[in-house]
Image (cartoon, rainbow, N blue to C red):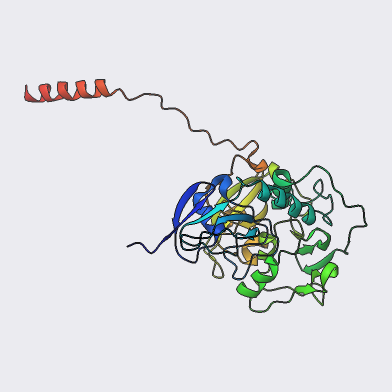
Length: 333
Protein backbone atom coordinates (compact mmCIF):
# COMPACT_ATOMS: atom_id res chain seq x y z
CA UNK A 1 0.00 0.00 0.00
CA UNK A 2 1.35 3.38 -1.02
CA UNK A 3 1.92 5.98 1.69
CA UNK A 4 1.57 8.81 -0.80
CA UNK A 5 -1.51 11.03 -1.02
CA UNK A 6 -3.33 12.14 -4.15
CA UNK A 7 -4.09 15.78 -4.82
CA UNK A 8 -5.74 17.27 -7.89
CA UNK A 9 -4.66 20.76 -9.01
CA UNK A 10 -6.52 22.36 -11.92
CA UNK A 11 -7.77 18.94 -12.99
CA UNK A 12 -4.34 17.25 -12.93
CA UNK A 13 -3.78 14.57 -10.28
CA UNK A 14 -0.40 13.92 -8.72
CA UNK A 15 0.83 11.67 -5.90
CA UNK A 16 3.06 13.31 -3.31
CA UNK A 17 4.54 12.57 0.09
CA UNK A 18 2.40 13.42 3.14
CA UNK A 19 3.20 16.88 4.48
CA UNK A 20 4.00 18.30 1.03
CA UNK A 21 2.65 21.81 0.55
CA UNK A 22 0.19 22.58 -2.24
CA UNK A 23 2.83 24.77 -3.89
CA UNK A 24 5.43 22.00 -4.00
CA UNK A 25 2.83 19.54 -5.26
CA UNK A 26 2.07 21.97 -8.08
CA UNK A 27 5.79 22.25 -8.81
CA UNK A 28 5.88 18.51 -9.39
CA UNK A 29 3.26 19.01 -12.11
CA UNK A 30 5.02 22.08 -13.53
CA UNK A 31 3.98 24.59 -16.18
CA UNK A 32 1.27 27.18 -15.62
CA UNK A 33 -0.18 25.08 -12.79
CA UNK A 34 2.56 26.36 -10.44
CA UNK A 35 1.42 29.40 -8.40
CA UNK A 36 3.88 32.32 -8.31
CA UNK A 37 5.89 32.82 -5.13
CA UNK A 38 7.81 35.91 -4.06
CA UNK A 39 8.70 35.03 -0.47
CA UNK A 40 8.75 31.22 -0.36
CA UNK A 41 12.16 29.56 -0.81
CA UNK A 42 12.32 25.78 -0.55
CA UNK A 43 15.87 25.84 0.83
CA UNK A 44 15.09 28.33 3.61
CA UNK A 45 13.27 26.95 6.63
CA UNK A 46 10.34 29.11 7.76
CA UNK A 47 10.01 31.09 4.54
CA UNK A 48 6.65 31.70 2.91
CA UNK A 49 3.27 33.06 3.93
CA UNK A 50 4.16 36.75 3.62
CA UNK A 51 3.65 37.90 0.03
CA UNK A 52 0.30 36.07 -0.58
CA UNK A 53 0.96 35.76 -4.32
CA UNK A 54 0.56 31.97 -4.17
CA UNK A 55 -3.12 32.11 -3.11
CA UNK A 56 -5.22 29.18 -4.35
CA UNK A 57 -8.75 27.91 -3.85
CA UNK A 58 -9.28 24.56 -2.12
CA UNK A 59 -12.59 23.35 -3.55
CA UNK A 60 -12.40 19.98 -1.75
CA UNK A 61 -10.59 19.49 1.53
CA UNK A 62 -10.03 15.73 1.36
CA UNK A 63 -11.83 12.43 0.86
CA UNK A 64 -12.69 12.26 4.55
CA UNK A 65 -13.88 15.88 4.71
CA UNK A 66 -14.88 17.09 1.23
CA UNK A 67 -15.99 20.52 2.41
CA UNK A 68 -14.19 23.39 0.61
CA UNK A 69 -12.07 25.82 2.57
CA UNK A 70 -14.04 29.03 3.13
CA UNK A 71 -11.26 31.40 2.00
CA UNK A 72 -8.35 31.42 -0.41
CA UNK A 73 -5.22 29.99 1.19
CA UNK A 74 -1.48 30.48 0.73
CA UNK A 75 -0.37 27.34 -1.13
CA UNK A 76 3.14 27.51 0.34
CA UNK A 77 1.77 27.09 3.88
CA UNK A 78 -1.03 24.52 3.47
CA UNK A 79 -0.19 20.82 3.31
CA UNK A 80 -2.02 18.50 0.96
CA UNK A 81 -4.61 15.95 2.09
CA UNK A 82 -5.57 12.74 0.33
CA UNK A 83 -8.26 13.52 -2.21
CA UNK A 84 -7.79 17.30 -2.00
CA UNK A 85 -8.86 19.34 -5.02
CA UNK A 86 -7.26 22.74 -5.69
CA UNK A 87 -7.97 25.46 -8.22
CA UNK A 88 -5.28 27.88 -9.32
CA UNK A 89 -5.48 29.31 -12.84
CA UNK A 90 -8.91 27.72 -13.33
CA UNK A 91 -10.45 29.88 -10.58
CA UNK A 92 -11.57 33.44 -11.50
CA UNK A 93 -11.58 34.22 -7.77
CA UNK A 94 -7.87 33.36 -7.50
CA UNK A 95 -6.96 35.38 -10.58
CA UNK A 96 -8.79 38.44 -9.26
CA UNK A 97 -7.26 38.12 -5.77
CA UNK A 98 -3.78 37.79 -7.26
CA UNK A 99 -4.26 41.05 -9.15
CA UNK A 100 -5.05 42.73 -5.83
CA UNK A 101 -1.95 41.25 -4.20
CA UNK A 102 0.26 42.48 -7.05
CA UNK A 103 -1.30 45.94 -6.73
CA UNK A 104 -0.42 46.00 -3.01
CA UNK A 105 3.17 44.92 -3.71
CA UNK A 106 3.53 47.71 -6.27
CA UNK A 107 2.04 50.45 -4.06
CA UNK A 108 5.44 51.63 -2.82
CA UNK A 109 7.65 50.01 -5.44
CA UNK A 110 9.28 52.69 -7.64
CA UNK A 111 9.44 52.54 -11.44
CA UNK A 112 13.18 51.86 -11.45
CA UNK A 113 13.14 49.13 -14.11
CA UNK A 114 15.04 51.23 -16.71
CA UNK A 115 17.99 51.68 -14.32
CA UNK A 116 17.62 48.68 -12.00
CA UNK A 117 20.26 45.93 -12.26
CA UNK A 118 17.60 43.34 -11.47
CA UNK A 119 15.66 44.15 -14.66
CA UNK A 120 15.40 41.10 -16.88
CA UNK A 121 15.56 38.62 -14.00
CA UNK A 122 13.15 40.33 -11.58
CA UNK A 123 10.35 38.13 -10.27
CA UNK A 124 8.22 41.18 -9.54
CA UNK A 125 8.46 42.23 -13.18
CA UNK A 126 7.27 38.80 -14.29
CA UNK A 127 4.51 38.78 -11.68
CA UNK A 128 3.19 42.22 -12.59
CA UNK A 129 3.27 41.37 -16.31
CA UNK A 130 1.37 38.10 -15.82
CA UNK A 131 -1.06 39.08 -13.05
CA UNK A 132 -0.96 42.85 -12.61
CA UNK A 133 -3.22 45.61 -13.89
CA UNK A 134 -2.26 48.41 -16.24
CA UNK A 135 -2.99 51.29 -13.87
CA UNK A 136 -2.69 52.15 -10.20
CA UNK A 137 -5.36 53.53 -7.87
CA UNK A 138 -2.80 54.75 -5.36
CA UNK A 139 -2.67 58.54 -5.18
CA UNK A 140 -0.74 59.13 -1.97
CA UNK A 141 2.95 59.77 -1.45
CA UNK A 142 5.02 56.63 -1.63
CA UNK A 143 7.37 55.69 1.15
CA UNK A 144 11.06 56.25 0.43
CA UNK A 145 14.30 55.29 2.15
CA UNK A 146 17.90 56.41 1.74
CA UNK A 147 20.27 54.00 0.01
CA UNK A 148 22.71 52.41 2.43
CA UNK A 149 25.69 50.06 2.15
CA UNK A 150 24.93 47.12 4.42
CA UNK A 151 28.12 45.39 3.29
CA UNK A 152 31.35 46.20 1.54
CA UNK A 153 29.99 44.97 -1.81
CA UNK A 154 26.23 45.03 -1.19
CA UNK A 155 23.94 47.99 -1.91
CA UNK A 156 20.52 48.15 -0.26
CA UNK A 157 17.65 49.99 -2.00
CA UNK A 158 15.00 49.64 0.69
CA UNK A 159 12.51 51.62 -1.42
CA UNK A 160 12.30 48.62 -3.77
CA UNK A 161 11.94 46.02 -0.99
CA UNK A 162 8.70 44.01 -0.66
CA UNK A 163 9.64 42.61 2.79
CA UNK A 164 9.78 38.97 1.74
CA UNK A 165 12.30 38.24 4.57
CA UNK A 166 14.37 35.92 2.35
CA UNK A 167 17.63 37.76 3.05
CA UNK A 168 16.97 37.54 6.79
CA UNK A 169 16.34 33.79 6.62
CA UNK A 170 19.42 33.12 4.50
CA UNK A 171 21.60 35.08 6.94
CA UNK A 172 20.08 33.17 9.86
CA UNK A 173 20.56 29.74 8.35
CA UNK A 174 23.83 29.76 6.38
CA UNK A 175 25.95 32.29 8.28
CA UNK A 176 27.36 32.25 11.80
CA UNK A 177 26.06 35.66 12.82
CA UNK A 178 23.15 37.62 11.36
CA UNK A 179 23.72 41.36 11.50
CA UNK A 180 20.66 42.68 9.67
CA UNK A 181 16.92 42.30 10.10
CA UNK A 182 13.58 44.12 10.20
CA UNK A 183 13.61 47.49 11.95
CA UNK A 184 10.40 49.35 12.73
CA UNK A 185 6.80 48.20 12.45
CA UNK A 186 3.94 48.53 9.99
CA UNK A 187 4.52 50.97 7.14
CA UNK A 188 7.84 51.98 8.71
CA UNK A 189 9.28 48.45 8.56
CA UNK A 190 12.60 48.18 6.76
CA UNK A 191 15.53 45.84 6.22
CA UNK A 192 18.63 47.40 7.75
CA UNK A 193 21.58 47.15 10.11
CA UNK A 194 22.36 49.33 13.10
CA UNK A 195 25.81 50.05 11.68
CA UNK A 196 26.47 50.52 7.95
CA UNK A 197 28.78 48.05 6.17
CA UNK A 198 28.42 45.66 9.11
CA UNK A 199 27.82 42.54 7.01
CA UNK A 200 31.16 40.99 6.10
CA UNK A 201 30.83 37.19 6.53
CA UNK A 202 31.92 34.70 3.86
CA UNK A 203 28.39 34.00 2.61
CA UNK A 204 26.84 37.48 2.78
CA UNK A 205 26.60 37.76 -1.02
CA UNK A 206 23.86 35.13 -1.09
CA UNK A 207 21.34 37.68 0.13
CA UNK A 208 21.71 39.23 -3.34
CA UNK A 209 20.78 35.96 -5.06
CA UNK A 210 17.69 35.28 -2.94
CA UNK A 211 16.25 38.80 -3.29
CA UNK A 212 13.32 38.59 -5.77
CA UNK A 213 13.52 42.31 -6.65
CA UNK A 214 16.30 44.89 -6.98
CA UNK A 215 16.49 45.79 -3.30
CA UNK A 216 19.86 44.08 -2.79
CA UNK A 217 22.37 44.49 -5.61
CA UNK A 218 25.99 43.61 -6.31
CA UNK A 219 28.12 46.78 -6.13
CA UNK A 220 30.79 45.19 -8.36
CA UNK A 221 28.20 44.75 -11.15
CA UNK A 222 26.09 47.89 -10.68
CA UNK A 223 25.35 49.75 -13.92
CA UNK A 224 27.96 47.73 -15.86
CA UNK A 225 25.56 46.08 -18.28
CA UNK A 226 22.02 44.91 -18.88
CA UNK A 227 21.63 41.25 -18.08
CA UNK A 228 20.20 40.36 -21.52
CA UNK A 229 23.42 41.54 -23.18
CA UNK A 230 25.49 39.05 -21.18
CA UNK A 231 26.03 35.35 -21.76
CA UNK A 232 25.65 32.98 -18.79
CA UNK A 233 28.05 30.03 -18.62
CA UNK A 234 28.12 27.25 -16.01
CA UNK A 235 31.50 26.72 -14.34
CA UNK A 236 33.04 25.26 -11.21
CA UNK A 237 36.28 25.27 -9.26
CA UNK A 238 37.79 23.51 -6.27
CA UNK A 239 36.75 25.89 -3.49
CA UNK A 240 37.56 25.07 0.16
CA UNK A 241 34.63 27.14 1.46
CA UNK A 242 31.69 26.17 -0.81
CA UNK A 243 30.92 23.69 -3.59
CA UNK A 244 32.14 26.19 -6.19
CA UNK A 245 29.28 25.57 -8.66
CA UNK A 246 28.47 28.94 -10.23
CA UNK A 247 27.21 30.78 -13.28
CA UNK A 248 29.64 33.19 -14.95
CA UNK A 249 28.08 36.14 -16.81
CA UNK A 250 30.24 37.15 -19.76
CA UNK A 251 30.42 40.27 -21.91
CA UNK A 252 32.87 39.31 -24.62
CA UNK A 253 35.73 37.61 -22.78
CA UNK A 254 35.20 39.56 -19.54
CA UNK A 255 33.40 38.07 -16.54
CA UNK A 256 31.10 40.82 -15.29
CA UNK A 257 29.64 38.94 -12.35
CA UNK A 258 29.41 35.54 -10.68
CA UNK A 259 26.18 34.15 -9.22
CA UNK A 260 24.90 30.91 -7.79
CA UNK A 261 23.16 28.56 -10.18
CA UNK A 262 19.38 28.86 -10.07
CA UNK A 263 16.75 26.25 -10.88
CA UNK A 264 13.57 26.69 -12.93
CA UNK A 265 11.84 28.33 -9.96
CA UNK A 266 14.56 30.94 -9.49
CA UNK A 267 16.02 29.33 -6.38
CA UNK A 268 19.76 28.91 -5.84
CA UNK A 269 20.87 25.29 -6.12
CA UNK A 270 24.01 25.73 -3.99
CA UNK A 271 24.93 28.81 -1.97
CA UNK A 272 28.38 30.15 -2.85
CA UNK A 273 31.02 32.02 -0.85
CA UNK A 274 32.10 35.63 -1.34
CA UNK A 275 35.49 34.55 -2.70
CA UNK A 276 33.82 32.81 -5.63
CA UNK A 277 31.31 35.62 -6.11
CA UNK A 278 33.39 38.78 -5.81
CA UNK A 279 37.08 37.90 -6.00
CA UNK A 280 37.37 35.21 -8.70
CA UNK A 281 36.43 36.81 -12.00
CA UNK A 282 39.15 35.37 -14.22
CA UNK A 283 38.23 32.63 -16.68
CA UNK A 284 41.51 30.87 -15.89
CA UNK A 285 40.29 30.29 -12.32
CA UNK A 286 37.29 28.23 -13.48
CA UNK A 287 36.56 24.96 -15.24
CA UNK A 288 33.98 25.86 -17.90
CA UNK A 289 31.13 23.37 -18.26
CA UNK A 290 29.18 25.04 -21.07
CA UNK A 291 26.42 27.58 -21.77
CA UNK A 292 23.69 27.94 -19.17
CA UNK A 293 20.26 26.78 -20.33
CA UNK A 294 17.90 29.76 -20.35
CA UNK A 295 14.12 29.37 -20.60
CA UNK A 296 12.60 30.68 -23.82
CA UNK A 297 10.24 32.87 -21.79
CA UNK A 298 13.13 34.79 -20.22
CA UNK A 299 14.39 38.02 -21.76
CA UNK A 300 17.91 36.74 -21.10
CA UNK A 301 17.34 34.12 -23.81
CA UNK A 302 17.45 36.86 -26.48
CA UNK A 303 20.21 35.96 -28.97
CA UNK A 304 20.94 32.74 -27.07
CA UNK A 305 20.03 30.08 -29.60
CA UNK A 306 20.20 26.38 -28.76
CA UNK A 307 20.70 25.08 -32.31
CA UNK A 308 20.91 21.34 -32.89
CA UNK A 309 22.13 20.65 -36.46
CA UNK A 310 20.32 18.01 -38.48
CA UNK A 311 22.29 14.85 -39.31
CA UNK A 312 24.03 15.04 -42.68
CA UNK A 313 23.30 11.38 -43.44
CA UNK A 314 19.86 10.05 -42.53
CA UNK A 315 19.58 6.45 -41.43
CA UNK A 316 17.77 4.22 -43.92
CA UNK A 317 16.60 1.07 -42.16
CA UNK A 318 15.88 -0.76 -45.42
CA UNK A 319 19.38 -0.07 -46.70
CA UNK A 320 20.93 -1.08 -43.37
CA UNK A 321 19.15 -4.46 -43.43
CA UNK A 322 20.13 -5.04 -47.07
CA UNK A 323 23.75 -4.31 -46.23
CA UNK A 324 23.64 -6.84 -43.37
CA UNK A 325 22.33 -9.54 -45.71
CA UNK A 326 24.95 -8.75 -48.33
CA UNK A 327 27.72 -8.78 -45.71
CA UNK A 328 26.61 -12.21 -44.43
CA UNK A 329 26.62 -13.58 -48.02
CA UNK A 330 30.09 -12.20 -48.73
CA UNK A 331 31.39 -13.64 -45.46
CA UNK A 332 30.12 -17.16 -46.33
CA UNK A 333 31.64 -17.03 -49.80
